[in-house]
Image (cartoon, rainbow, N blue to C red; front, side, top):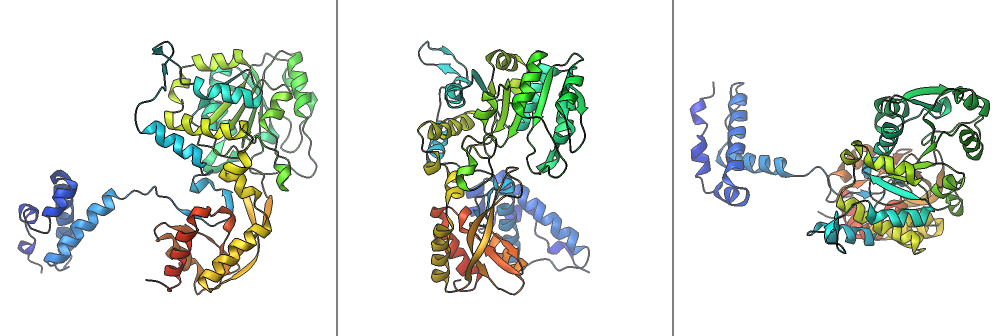
Amino acid sequence: MIDRREIPAVNTLLRSEEVLPLIANYGRPLVLDCVRTVLAEIREKSGGGRPVPDRLALFSMVENKIHSWLSSSLVPVINATGVVLHTNLGRAPLSKAARQAVSDISAGYCTLEYDLENGDRGSRSTHVESLLTRLCRAEAALVVNNNAAAVLLVLSALASRKRVIISRTQLVEIGGGFRVPEVMRQSGAKLVEIGTTNRVHLSDYEEALSEPTALVMCAHHSNFKLVGFTSEPSLPELVALSQRFDVPVVDDLGSGALLDTARFGLPHEPTVQESLQAGVDLVCFSGDKLLGGPQAGIIVGRAQLISKLRKNPLARAVRADKTCLAALAATLLHYLKDEAEREIPVWKMIGQTPEDLQKRAEAWREALDQGEVIPGLSTVGGGSLPEETLPTRVLAFTVPRPNRFLARLRTLQPPIVAIVQEEKVILDPRTVLPEQEAELLHGLEIALGKKV
C-alpha cells in the first residue's frame, strides 16, 4: 500500500528551487493550478498501487503539463500531399504581399471604419468593394467571413419565408457536412426542389416560377460530377427565363475562379465574370479557394440587392475582420495588376510544369541520397474541379511501416504531411513552398535516421 504522505504538499512544491523558474516564466496562478492538477493525478494513481514519482520526475511532470496546456494546436505545416487547396491544411496559402498586409494592419490601429477625409465614421465594406467591382465588372460587392455565410445572408435577407427554386441536381453536400438544402432551410427560405437527381429542364423552372417566388438558386456541383444521362439548362437560358418572371438569380459558384483554368491544362471552371456576363443578379464565392486569398465569402452583383444585404442584421454577425480585408485587398490587387500567376501561391503551384517538378524532386533525392523520383498526380482540391488531376513528379520512399513513418513526419517541427501510395511514402513538390524546402529536407533526414 502506498503511503500518501509521501506526496508533497502544494506549497512545498511551489517554494522549491526547480519550480521557481516556472513561476517567473508563466506566473504563479498558472503554476499553482498545474501543481494541483499533477498532485491530484498522482493521488489517483497511487490509490491503484503506483509509486509516488521522485522529486525530479515530479518537477518534470509539472513542466510538461504546463507546456501541454500552453502549446498551440494550430501550427504551420509543410504540405507534401500534392493537394493544392487542402481544406484540412487551411486551403490557399497567402501571397507575400497579402501576408505583409495582414502584418501591417494587425500591428496597430487602422482605418477599418474611419473616413480619413471627413474625420468621421466610415464603412469597412469600402476597402475591397471598388477592387471587386472593377475586377468582376459588378455594380456592388460585399464581403463576409465565408461562403456559407454569404449564401445564408443572401437567402435570409431576400427570401425569408419565401420560395426559392433549386434543381435537385445541385442539392450537394460538401466537406464538414455543409448541405445546401439545410443552409437554405436555416435561412427561413421555403425550398422548392425541381427536376430529378440527374436531369432538370427549363420547363421545370418555368412551371415552378408560375407561383410567387423570391429567388432562383444555382449551386456549383463543387466536389462531384454529373455524368451519364444528364441535363441542365445553361445559365443564360435560366437567366432569360427568370427575367421574364422578374425573379433574381443567385449563383453560388463556390470556388471563385477569376482565371481560366483551361490555360493550365485543366477543364474550364466557370468564372465569376462569366456568371455576371450571363446576367446573374448575385454571385457568391469563396476567398480561399481558387481566388487564392484569405477565408472570406464574397458577394458581387446588383447594387440594389447588395444594399438589402448590408441592411440585414445578419450582415453584422458574419462580417469580415480587418486582417481578412487587408489580405483580400492585397490578393485582388495581384489580379488587377495582371500578376496573379506570378504572385499568388495557388496559381504558381497549379502552373508548375512536370519538368519543373522533376528538377525539384531530383534535387531532394540527391540531397537525401535516398528515394526515387516517379510520375504522380496532383489535385486541385478544395471542392474545385472534382477528379481532375495535374501530372507531377514525386519523391517516393520505400520504408518499413510507411504509415508509422508518416506519423513520425507529423511529429517534426514543422510537421510534414505526406501520403502513402502502394506502400510507398510519397512527397509531391508541387505543394511545398520553395522557402520550406530546407526545413523539409532537414525533417526528412531526421525521420530517415540520417540526423539526430
